Amino acid sequence: GGPTRGGEFILALSPSLLSGSNDPARNEEFLQQFEAIPGARLPGARRHRKRRKPGPRQIDGDLLAKIQALM
Image (cartoon, rainbow, N blue to C red; front, side, top):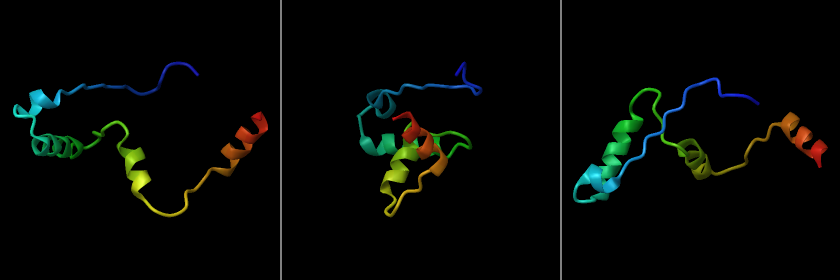
C-alpha cells in the first residue's frame, strides 16, 4: 500500500551502557521516564498491555468477514 503516512523513529538501547552496572532497576526507571514523554511509546507496549487485560476481546465484524471471504 505505498509509503507510510507518518514518521518512524527507531532507537536501539544497550542496557549495559544505560545502567553502567547493568542494574535492571535503573533500566526500568529509564524506560518509565521515556514512556512519560508525551507521544513516546515503546514498541509492543500496547500489545503487552492488552495481553494483561482479562476478558473477551472485541473483533471488527467487517474485517472478519473480509478475511473469511479470502479463504
